[in-house]
Amino acid sequence: MVNPPSQVKAEIGILLTVYNGEQFIAQCIESIQGQTVPNWQLIVVDDRSTDATPDILADFAKRDSRILLLKGAHTGIAAAANLGLAEVSAPFLARIDADDVALPNRLQVQRDYLLANPRALAVGSYVRLIDAQNKRLGLRKAPTGSVEIAATLKTRNCMCHPSSMIRTDAMRMIGGYRSKFKNSLDYDLWLRLSEIGQISNQAQELLLYRRHANQVSASANSHRQTLYSVGAAIDHFFRRYGRIERDSLIDESNNDDLANCLQEIYNLELSPADRSAVNRHAIRLLRYAKFLSNDARHSLVGAMLPNLSLTERLKHHLYRALSAR
Image 1 (cartoon, rainbow, N blue to C red):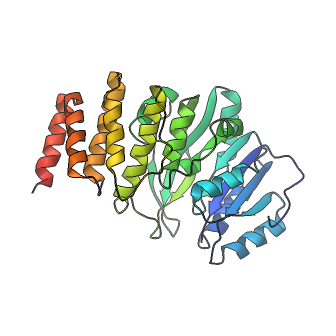
Image 2 (image 1 turned 90 degrees about the vertical axis):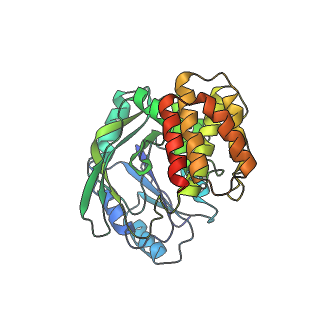
Image 3 (image 1 turned 30 degrees about the horizontal axis):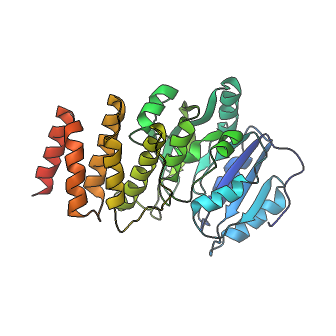
């Protein structure tokens, strides 16, 4: 710990994990300092950065007692985030990434929403994409109603993690972040939160979400992203149907276990909506997993095909025909 926390009890705890973020970290922190709500504590976990990030953070913390610095062990994002979460004493927890920018009213809008909606456990927002030079690009919208979000989460992530504010007690109730997920840990988080309460999005932009060259693109990372998102969905359906979720880590070099888990889910008495969602995850695994044996692939296809709708079956056969070219 570099400096003691502020003696003023914060209403909002803001959690930021960073590794080598010297290019944008100052702008991110300045956007927090410019919030219309002043009663916050920014908890920054520096995950052993090797660039100028520690010096930049130390300078900010020296000048603002609301900033608490922690040193991570560089053992993964989940571990760093849980280290920061343990220091949050405020009732509301806001997340932000080191390369993003919070618009001035972000904390106030989200705090007011959670105060007015006691059944809501978390709230995100629309985000405006920006580039490395702060040029504003497109607006990324998201579903807003809790029912629509819960339904969408069965097939994909629809919550922008760095735009979110979450009730701290709900985060602790579900055990925080899980180190099992080296990727898609936010998708796993939203699935678990959605199982115990409501999640919403504000239909307004509250965050500038940066796109830049140092990020790993979804296309270049499709195999890894697929494994962890499918793994998060598998755990969700195991919990939903009273099965014990797997504690074992996801093997990035052997994807057969994920295929076997999906086959096990197909053997359950799934609702039509859940069956359709499982189909989406099975098709995605078949499409993007790099290390799926022929036997596992054949068995998963055999379990999946009887559950496909006519439209899903046509799309599946079309993809196979195009891939064969």
